[in-house]
Amino acid sequence: MSAIPFVPDDFEVPRSLRAEHFVLEPLGPQHNASDHEAWGSSIDHIRSTPGFDPDDWGGDTWPYPMSAEQNLADLQMHAGEFERREAFAYTVLDGDGDANSAEVIGCVYIDPDNAADALVRADAMVRCWVRSDRALLDPVLAASVREWLAAHWPFTTVRFPGRDVAVG
Image: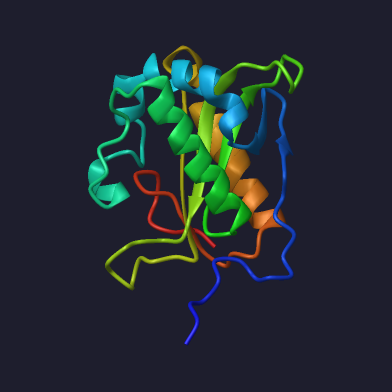
C-alpha cells in the first residue's frame, strides 16, 4: 500500500513566484549565509508571526539558535523534500535585487497538513515569515501566497495556522 502523494505526479511544481516586493524560489543550500542571517536576526519576530506557535508545528520550537553548519543541513533537508515532492520550502528574496545576489527576507513552507482534527485538516498547511526589518511585508506575502496557491497549485483547501482555519 503506497502513501497518497502530496501533489499529483503529473503536477509541475512552480519554481518561482514574482511579486512587486519579493521573489520566491526553492530554498536550498545556496541561500545558507543570507537565510541564516535573516532568521537569526529575527527569532522573536518569527516566533510572534501567525503559524509559528509550536502547536502549529507539531511541537517544533524553531526558530532557535543554530550554527551556519546546522542551518546548511536544514536547507539540504528542505531541498531534498522539495525534490521528492514531500513538502515545498521557498526562500523569499528581496524583489529589488538580482535573484542571484538578492537578500533573503523570509521563507514560505508548504507542507501536508498535520492537523489532528480531521474537521480542520486541509490539503496543505502553509506558514510564512519575513525578517523583522521587513515586517510590513508579512500580510503582503501571505496574501500573495494565498493567490498563488489558488491559481497555480492543485489544492482544494489550504490552512494557514494562526491566520485562519482553512480556505479553499
